[in-house]
Length: 427
Image (cartoon, rainbow, N blue to C red; front, side, top):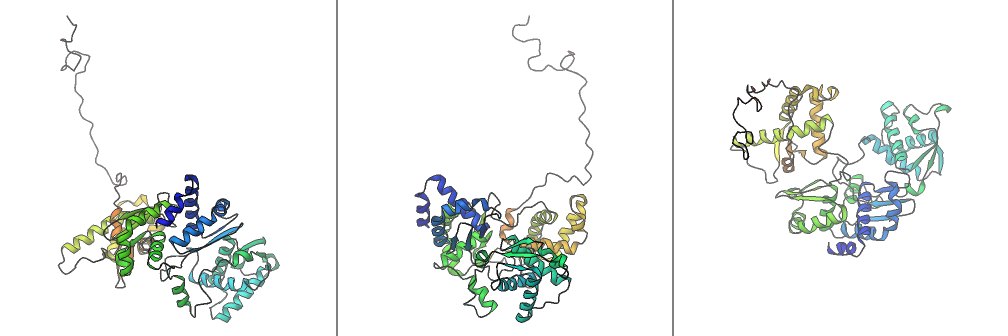
Protein backbone atom coordinates (compact mmCIF):
# COMPACT_ATOMS: atom_id res chain seq x y z
CA UNK A 1 0.00 0.00 0.00
CA UNK A 2 1.72 3.14 -1.23
CA UNK A 3 0.03 5.37 1.37
CA UNK A 4 1.68 3.47 4.21
CA UNK A 5 5.06 3.51 2.48
CA UNK A 6 4.69 7.25 1.90
CA UNK A 7 3.93 7.59 5.60
CA UNK A 8 7.23 5.91 6.49
CA UNK A 9 9.14 7.82 3.80
CA UNK A 10 8.11 11.10 5.42
CA UNK A 11 9.85 10.10 8.66
CA UNK A 12 13.58 10.33 9.36
CA UNK A 13 15.30 6.99 8.82
CA UNK A 14 15.75 6.32 12.52
CA UNK A 15 12.08 7.05 13.26
CA UNK A 16 10.93 4.82 10.38
CA UNK A 17 13.11 2.01 11.74
CA UNK A 18 11.68 2.52 15.24
CA UNK A 19 8.11 2.41 13.89
CA UNK A 20 8.84 -0.93 12.19
CA UNK A 21 10.46 -2.19 15.40
CA UNK A 22 7.43 -1.20 17.47
CA UNK A 23 5.06 -2.75 14.91
CA UNK A 24 6.91 -6.06 15.21
CA UNK A 25 6.73 -5.94 19.00
CA UNK A 26 2.98 -5.27 18.92
CA UNK A 27 2.40 -8.18 16.55
CA UNK A 28 4.23 -10.44 19.00
CA UNK A 29 2.83 -8.79 22.16
CA UNK A 30 -0.72 -7.60 21.38
CA UNK A 31 -1.02 -6.63 25.07
CA UNK A 32 2.19 -4.73 25.82
CA UNK A 33 2.51 -3.48 29.37
CA UNK A 34 5.07 -1.83 31.57
CA UNK A 35 6.97 -4.48 33.52
CA UNK A 36 6.03 -7.26 31.11
CA UNK A 37 7.97 -8.85 28.25
CA UNK A 38 9.36 -6.14 25.90
CA UNK A 39 7.77 -3.57 28.19
CA UNK A 40 10.85 -1.36 27.91
CA UNK A 41 9.68 -0.40 24.40
CA UNK A 42 6.38 1.00 25.65
CA UNK A 43 7.68 4.63 25.77
CA UNK A 44 8.80 4.29 22.13
CA UNK A 45 5.39 2.89 21.16
CA UNK A 46 3.72 5.79 22.94
CA UNK A 47 5.93 8.29 21.11
CA UNK A 48 5.00 6.85 17.68
CA UNK A 49 1.43 5.93 18.60
CA UNK A 50 -0.24 8.06 15.89
CA UNK A 51 1.89 6.59 13.10
CA UNK A 52 1.45 3.06 14.45
CA UNK A 53 -2.30 3.44 14.76
CA UNK A 54 -2.52 4.61 11.15
CA UNK A 55 -0.19 1.85 9.94
CA UNK A 56 -2.19 -0.96 11.56
CA UNK A 57 -5.54 0.53 10.54
CA UNK A 58 -4.56 0.92 6.88
CA UNK A 59 -2.58 -2.26 6.42
CA UNK A 60 -4.47 -4.80 8.54
CA UNK A 61 -7.65 -3.14 9.74
CA UNK A 62 -6.50 -3.53 13.35
CA UNK A 63 -7.36 -1.09 16.14
CA UNK A 64 -4.50 0.01 18.39
CA UNK A 65 -5.02 1.57 21.82
CA UNK A 66 -1.95 3.14 23.43
CA UNK A 67 -1.79 4.46 26.99
CA UNK A 68 1.12 5.33 29.24
CA UNK A 69 0.99 1.96 31.04
CA UNK A 70 0.01 -0.34 28.19
CA UNK A 71 -0.67 -0.74 24.50
CA UNK A 72 -3.35 -3.07 23.13
CA UNK A 73 -3.46 -4.24 19.51
CA UNK A 74 -6.84 -5.73 18.70
CA UNK A 75 -5.98 -8.49 16.25
CA UNK A 76 -8.43 -10.71 14.43
CA UNK A 77 -9.30 -14.09 15.88
CA UNK A 78 -7.91 -17.28 14.30
CA UNK A 79 -11.33 -18.55 13.25
CA UNK A 80 -11.56 -22.31 12.92
CA UNK A 81 -7.79 -22.73 13.35
CA UNK A 82 -7.32 -24.70 16.57
CA UNK A 83 -3.50 -24.62 16.52
CA UNK A 84 -3.32 -21.08 17.87
CA UNK A 85 -3.46 -20.05 21.50
CA UNK A 86 -1.46 -20.42 24.68
CA UNK A 87 0.21 -23.85 24.60
CA UNK A 88 -0.07 -24.31 28.38
CA UNK A 89 -3.85 -23.78 28.41
CA UNK A 90 -6.08 -26.76 27.78
CA UNK A 91 -9.65 -26.26 26.50
CA UNK A 92 -10.85 -26.66 30.10
CA UNK A 93 -8.36 -24.02 31.24
CA UNK A 94 -9.60 -21.68 28.50
CA UNK A 95 -13.13 -22.13 29.81
CA UNK A 96 -11.95 -21.19 33.29
CA UNK A 97 -10.11 -18.20 31.84
CA UNK A 98 -13.34 -16.87 30.34
CA UNK A 99 -15.26 -17.56 33.56
CA UNK A 100 -12.60 -15.84 35.68
CA UNK A 101 -12.70 -12.75 33.46
CA UNK A 102 -16.48 -12.65 33.79
CA UNK A 103 -16.24 -12.87 37.58
CA UNK A 104 -13.55 -10.19 37.80
CA UNK A 105 -15.63 -7.64 35.90
CA UNK A 106 -17.97 -7.44 38.88
CA UNK A 107 -15.30 -7.65 41.58
CA UNK A 108 -13.33 -4.91 43.29
CA UNK A 109 -9.66 -4.14 42.97
CA UNK A 110 -8.72 -6.73 45.60
CA UNK A 111 -10.16 -10.05 46.67
CA UNK A 112 -9.17 -13.23 48.45
CA UNK A 113 -8.19 -16.22 46.34
CA UNK A 114 -10.73 -18.43 48.10
CA UNK A 115 -13.51 -15.99 47.21
CA UNK A 116 -12.37 -15.78 43.59
CA UNK A 117 -12.23 -19.59 43.25
CA UNK A 118 -15.68 -19.97 44.83
CA UNK A 119 -17.17 -17.34 42.50
CA UNK A 120 -15.57 -18.92 39.43
CA UNK A 121 -16.93 -22.36 40.34
CA UNK A 122 -20.38 -20.86 40.89
CA UNK A 123 -20.17 -19.19 37.48
CA UNK A 124 -19.16 -22.54 35.95
CA UNK A 125 -22.23 -24.23 37.40
CA UNK A 126 -24.43 -21.41 36.13
CA UNK A 127 -22.89 -21.67 32.63
CA UNK A 128 -23.16 -25.46 32.55
CA UNK A 129 -19.38 -25.97 32.51
CA UNK A 130 -18.26 -29.14 34.38
CA UNK A 131 -16.43 -28.25 37.61
CA UNK A 132 -15.80 -31.52 39.50
CA UNK A 133 -13.17 -29.98 41.82
CA UNK A 134 -10.73 -32.85 41.31
CA UNK A 135 -6.98 -32.63 40.69
CA UNK A 136 -7.28 -32.12 36.92
CA UNK A 137 -9.99 -29.51 37.36
CA UNK A 138 -7.94 -27.57 39.91
CA UNK A 139 -4.90 -27.65 37.62
CA UNK A 140 -7.00 -26.16 34.81
CA UNK A 141 -8.27 -23.38 37.07
CA UNK A 142 -4.76 -22.68 38.36
CA UNK A 143 -3.42 -22.46 34.79
CA UNK A 144 -6.07 -19.84 33.97
CA UNK A 145 -5.20 -17.81 37.07
CA UNK A 146 -1.47 -18.04 36.35
CA UNK A 147 -2.06 -16.79 32.81
CA UNK A 148 -3.86 -13.72 34.17
CA UNK A 149 -0.92 -13.15 36.52
CA UNK A 150 1.50 -13.50 33.60
CA UNK A 151 -0.22 -10.83 31.50
CA UNK A 152 -0.52 -8.48 34.47
CA UNK A 153 -4.28 -8.53 35.06
CA UNK A 154 -3.81 -10.20 38.45
CA UNK A 155 -1.06 -9.44 40.97
CA UNK A 156 -0.24 -11.79 43.83
CA UNK A 157 -0.14 -9.20 46.60
CA UNK A 158 0.14 -11.83 49.35
CA UNK A 159 0.50 -15.54 48.72
CA UNK A 160 0.21 -17.19 45.33
CA UNK A 161 -2.52 -18.47 43.03
CA UNK A 162 -0.61 -21.78 42.81
CA UNK A 163 -2.32 -22.88 46.03
CA UNK A 164 -5.54 -23.22 44.02
CA UNK A 165 -4.09 -26.43 42.55
CA UNK A 166 -4.21 -28.05 46.00
CA UNK A 167 -7.52 -26.51 46.98
CA UNK A 168 -7.79 -23.42 49.15
CA UNK A 169 -8.88 -25.19 52.32
CA UNK A 170 -6.73 -23.59 55.02
CA UNK A 171 -5.70 -20.06 56.07
CA UNK A 172 -2.09 -20.95 55.18
CA UNK A 173 -3.15 -21.50 51.56
CA UNK A 174 -4.99 -18.18 51.32
CA UNK A 175 -3.80 -15.41 49.01
CA UNK A 176 -4.69 -11.76 48.42
CA UNK A 177 -5.16 -10.91 44.74
CA UNK A 178 -5.08 -7.40 43.23
CA UNK A 179 -6.94 -6.80 39.97
CA UNK A 180 -5.78 -4.34 37.30
CA UNK A 181 -9.20 -3.29 36.07
CA UNK A 182 -7.77 -1.16 33.26
CA UNK A 183 -5.97 -4.13 31.69
CA UNK A 184 -8.95 -6.39 32.36
CA UNK A 185 -11.13 -4.10 30.27
CA UNK A 186 -8.73 -4.42 27.33
CA UNK A 187 -8.61 -8.21 27.11
CA UNK A 188 -11.66 -9.11 25.05
CA UNK A 189 -11.15 -8.49 21.35
CA UNK A 190 -14.17 -10.31 19.96
CA UNK A 191 -17.59 -8.62 19.62
CA UNK A 192 -19.26 -10.42 22.54
CA UNK A 193 -22.32 -8.16 22.41
CA UNK A 194 -22.98 -9.01 18.74
CA UNK A 195 -22.63 -12.79 19.02
CA UNK A 196 -25.55 -15.01 19.84
CA UNK A 197 -23.51 -18.20 20.23
CA UNK A 198 -19.89 -19.31 20.70
CA UNK A 199 -19.60 -20.32 17.05
CA UNK A 200 -20.90 -16.95 15.93
CA UNK A 201 -18.41 -15.20 18.21
CA UNK A 202 -15.50 -17.11 16.63
CA UNK A 203 -16.80 -16.26 13.16
CA UNK A 204 -17.28 -12.55 13.93
CA UNK A 205 -13.87 -12.25 15.58
CA UNK A 206 -12.18 -13.58 12.44
CA UNK A 207 -14.03 -11.38 9.96
CA UNK A 208 -11.85 -9.24 7.66
CA UNK A 209 -11.26 -5.53 8.10
CA UNK A 210 -12.83 -2.62 6.20
CA UNK A 211 -10.83 -3.35 3.02
CA UNK A 212 -12.13 -6.92 3.04
CA UNK A 213 -9.89 -8.83 0.59
CA UNK A 214 -6.71 -6.79 1.11
CA UNK A 215 -6.97 -6.89 4.89
CA UNK A 216 -7.85 -10.58 4.96
CA UNK A 217 -4.86 -11.57 2.82
CA UNK A 218 -2.39 -9.32 4.64
CA UNK A 219 -3.50 -10.74 7.98
CA UNK A 220 -2.78 -14.23 6.67
CA UNK A 221 0.65 -13.18 5.41
CA UNK A 222 1.57 -11.58 8.73
CA UNK A 223 0.13 -14.26 11.01
CA UNK A 224 0.79 -17.48 9.05
CA UNK A 225 4.22 -18.66 7.92
CA UNK A 226 2.83 -20.32 4.77
CA UNK A 227 -0.08 -19.05 2.66
CA UNK A 228 -1.11 -21.28 -0.26
CA UNK A 229 -3.26 -19.95 -3.07
CA UNK A 230 -5.37 -23.11 -3.01
CA UNK A 231 -6.35 -22.48 0.61
CA UNK A 232 -7.61 -18.95 -0.05
CA UNK A 233 -11.01 -18.02 -1.48
CA UNK A 234 -10.74 -17.41 -5.23
CA UNK A 235 -11.03 -13.63 -4.90
CA UNK A 236 -8.25 -13.48 -2.30
CA UNK A 237 -5.98 -15.82 -4.28
CA UNK A 238 -6.37 -13.68 -7.43
CA UNK A 239 -5.62 -10.51 -5.43
CA UNK A 240 -2.47 -12.06 -3.96
CA UNK A 241 -1.18 -13.21 -7.37
CA UNK A 242 -1.65 -9.71 -8.77
CA UNK A 243 -0.12 -7.84 -5.84
CA UNK A 244 2.50 -10.19 -4.37
CA UNK A 245 5.47 -8.01 -5.41
CA UNK A 246 4.07 -4.89 -3.83
CA UNK A 247 2.99 -6.75 -0.71
CA UNK A 248 6.47 -8.19 -0.30
CA UNK A 249 7.87 -4.66 -0.19
CA UNK A 250 5.23 -3.58 2.31
CA UNK A 251 5.87 -6.54 4.64
CA UNK A 252 9.61 -5.92 4.59
CA UNK A 253 9.37 -2.18 5.19
CA UNK A 254 6.74 -2.33 7.91
CA UNK A 255 7.49 -5.62 9.72
CA UNK A 256 10.93 -6.75 8.46
CA UNK A 257 9.43 -9.94 7.04
CA UNK A 258 11.05 -11.68 4.08
CA UNK A 259 8.82 -13.41 1.55
CA UNK A 260 9.49 -16.31 -0.80
CA UNK A 261 7.06 -16.47 -3.70
CA UNK A 262 6.42 -19.82 -5.35
CA UNK A 263 3.85 -21.13 -7.79
CA UNK A 264 1.75 -22.60 -4.94
CA UNK A 265 1.84 -19.55 -2.65
CA UNK A 266 3.97 -17.37 -0.41
CA UNK A 267 6.12 -18.07 2.61
CA UNK A 268 6.82 -15.19 5.01
CA UNK A 269 9.75 -15.56 7.38
CA UNK A 270 11.39 -13.45 10.05
CA UNK A 271 15.20 -13.46 9.77
CA UNK A 272 15.43 -12.61 13.47
CA UNK A 273 13.02 -15.42 14.53
CA UNK A 274 11.17 -12.92 16.76
CA UNK A 275 7.71 -13.06 15.21
CA UNK A 276 7.35 -16.81 15.52
CA UNK A 277 6.13 -18.74 18.54
CA UNK A 278 7.44 -22.05 17.16
CA UNK A 279 11.02 -22.13 15.89
CA UNK A 280 11.71 -24.47 12.99
CA UNK A 281 14.22 -25.95 12.48
CA UNK A 282 14.70 -26.35 16.21
CA UNK A 283 17.04 -28.03 18.64
CA UNK A 284 14.62 -30.39 20.38
CA UNK A 285 14.44 -34.08 19.53
CA UNK A 286 10.97 -33.71 18.00
CA UNK A 287 12.03 -30.74 15.84
CA UNK A 288 15.19 -32.43 14.57
CA UNK A 289 13.42 -35.68 13.75
CA UNK A 290 10.68 -33.72 11.96
CA UNK A 291 13.31 -31.89 9.91
CA UNK A 292 15.11 -35.09 8.92
CA UNK A 293 11.84 -36.89 8.21
CA UNK A 294 10.55 -34.33 5.68
CA UNK A 295 12.82 -35.18 2.72
CA UNK A 296 12.35 -38.92 3.28
CA UNK A 297 8.57 -38.57 3.37
CA UNK A 298 8.53 -36.36 0.28
CA UNK A 299 10.83 -38.71 -1.62
CA UNK A 300 8.82 -41.77 -0.61
CA UNK A 301 5.52 -40.16 -1.56
CA UNK A 302 6.87 -39.04 -4.94
CA UNK A 303 8.22 -42.54 -5.66
CA UNK A 304 4.82 -44.01 -4.80
CA UNK A 305 3.09 -41.49 -7.06
CA UNK A 306 5.42 -42.35 -9.96
CA UNK A 307 4.45 -46.00 -9.66
CA UNK A 308 0.71 -45.43 -9.36
CA UNK A 309 -1.10 -44.22 -12.48
CA UNK A 310 -4.28 -43.69 -10.48
CA UNK A 311 -2.77 -41.09 -8.12
CA UNK A 312 -2.91 -37.71 -9.91
CA UNK A 313 -0.96 -34.77 -8.55
CA UNK A 314 -2.99 -32.54 -6.25
CA UNK A 315 -3.86 -29.05 -7.50
CA UNK A 316 -2.65 -27.45 -4.25
CA UNK A 317 0.76 -29.10 -4.49
CA UNK A 318 0.38 -30.97 -1.22
CA UNK A 319 1.91 -34.42 -0.89
CA UNK A 320 -0.19 -37.10 0.89
CA UNK A 321 1.48 -39.44 3.38
CA UNK A 322 0.08 -41.99 5.79
CA UNK A 323 0.67 -42.20 9.52
CA UNK A 324 2.36 -45.57 8.99
CA UNK A 325 4.84 -43.94 6.60
CA UNK A 326 5.63 -41.27 9.17
CA UNK A 327 6.01 -43.95 11.84
CA UNK A 328 8.40 -45.93 9.64
CA UNK A 329 10.62 -42.92 8.93
CA UNK A 330 10.68 -41.85 12.59
CA UNK A 331 11.48 -45.38 13.78
CA UNK A 332 14.33 -45.65 11.28
CA UNK A 333 15.82 -42.34 12.42
CA UNK A 334 15.61 -43.39 16.07
CA UNK A 335 17.24 -46.74 15.30
CA UNK A 336 19.98 -45.32 13.08
CA UNK A 337 21.13 -42.63 15.51
CA UNK A 338 20.20 -43.89 19.00
CA UNK A 339 22.54 -41.55 20.88
CA UNK A 340 21.32 -38.42 19.11
CA UNK A 341 17.87 -38.25 20.70
CA UNK A 342 16.26 -37.91 24.10
CA UNK A 343 15.33 -41.41 25.28
CA UNK A 344 12.32 -40.04 27.13
CA UNK A 345 10.92 -38.72 23.84
CA UNK A 346 11.79 -41.66 21.58
CA UNK A 347 10.95 -44.61 23.82
CA UNK A 348 7.31 -44.45 22.65
CA UNK A 349 7.37 -44.23 18.84
CA UNK A 350 3.60 -43.68 18.53
CA UNK A 351 3.82 -40.72 20.87
CA UNK A 352 6.82 -39.40 18.94
CA UNK A 353 4.87 -39.64 15.67
CA UNK A 354 2.01 -37.66 17.22
CA UNK A 355 4.36 -34.93 18.41
CA UNK A 356 6.15 -34.73 15.04
CA UNK A 357 2.85 -34.39 13.17
CA UNK A 358 1.60 -31.89 15.75
CA UNK A 359 4.68 -29.73 15.23
CA UNK A 360 4.38 -29.86 11.44
CA UNK A 361 0.73 -28.91 11.75
CA UNK A 362 1.45 -25.90 13.97
CA UNK A 363 3.97 -24.53 11.48
CA UNK A 364 1.63 -25.17 8.52
CA UNK A 365 3.80 -27.83 6.91
CA UNK A 366 1.20 -30.59 7.33
CA UNK A 367 -2.49 -31.00 7.98
CA UNK A 368 -4.84 -34.00 8.24
CA UNK A 369 -7.13 -34.62 5.28
CA UNK A 370 -9.88 -36.35 7.23
CA UNK A 371 -9.26 -39.75 5.63
CA UNK A 372 -6.47 -40.84 7.95
CA UNK A 373 -3.74 -39.31 5.79
CA UNK A 374 -1.64 -36.19 6.23
CA UNK A 375 -0.94 -33.65 3.50
CA UNK A 376 2.56 -32.15 3.42
CA UNK A 377 2.76 -28.55 2.26
CA UNK A 378 4.77 -27.81 -0.90
CA UNK A 379 6.77 -25.45 1.31
CA UNK A 380 8.28 -28.55 2.95
CA UNK A 381 10.56 -28.89 -0.07
CA UNK A 382 12.60 -25.89 1.10
CA UNK A 383 13.95 -27.83 4.09
CA UNK A 384 16.47 -30.34 2.79
CA UNK A 385 18.97 -30.87 5.60
CA UNK A 386 22.46 -32.07 4.81
CA UNK A 387 23.92 -33.82 7.86
CA UNK A 388 27.60 -33.28 8.59
CA UNK A 389 27.97 -37.04 9.02
CA UNK A 390 26.70 -40.08 10.86
CA UNK A 391 28.91 -40.22 13.95
CA UNK A 392 26.93 -42.99 15.62
CA UNK A 393 27.35 -45.36 12.68
CA UNK A 394 30.57 -47.34 12.43
CA UNK A 395 32.90 -45.77 9.90
CA UNK A 396 35.41 -47.86 7.91
CA UNK A 397 38.95 -47.50 9.12
CA UNK A 398 41.13 -45.44 6.85
CA UNK A 399 44.76 -46.33 6.15
CA UNK A 400 47.14 -43.38 5.79
CA UNK A 401 48.86 -43.27 2.38
CA UNK A 402 52.28 -44.89 2.23
CA UNK A 403 55.05 -42.31 2.49
CA UNK A 404 57.90 -42.33 -0.04
CA UNK A 405 61.29 -43.44 1.20
CA UNK A 406 63.03 -40.37 -0.16
CA UNK A 407 63.08 -36.78 1.04
CA UNK A 408 63.87 -33.45 -0.49
CA UNK A 409 67.11 -33.29 1.40
CA UNK A 410 68.78 -36.69 0.87
CA UNK A 411 69.56 -36.17 -2.81
CA UNK A 412 68.06 -39.53 -3.84
CA UNK A 413 64.54 -38.58 -4.78
CA UNK A 414 63.12 -36.82 -7.81
CA UNK A 415 63.91 -33.17 -8.08
CA UNK A 416 61.43 -30.65 -6.81
CA UNK A 417 60.98 -27.19 -8.32
CA UNK A 418 63.73 -24.91 -7.14
CA UNK A 419 65.88 -27.77 -5.79
CA UNK A 420 67.59 -29.06 -8.96
CA UNK A 421 71.21 -28.57 -9.92
CA UNK A 422 70.38 -26.39 -12.92
CA UNK A 423 69.14 -23.34 -10.90
CA UNK A 424 70.12 -20.00 -12.26
CA UNK A 425 73.44 -18.94 -10.77
CA UNK A 426 74.62 -22.48 -9.93
CA UNK A 427 77.94 -23.57 -11.29
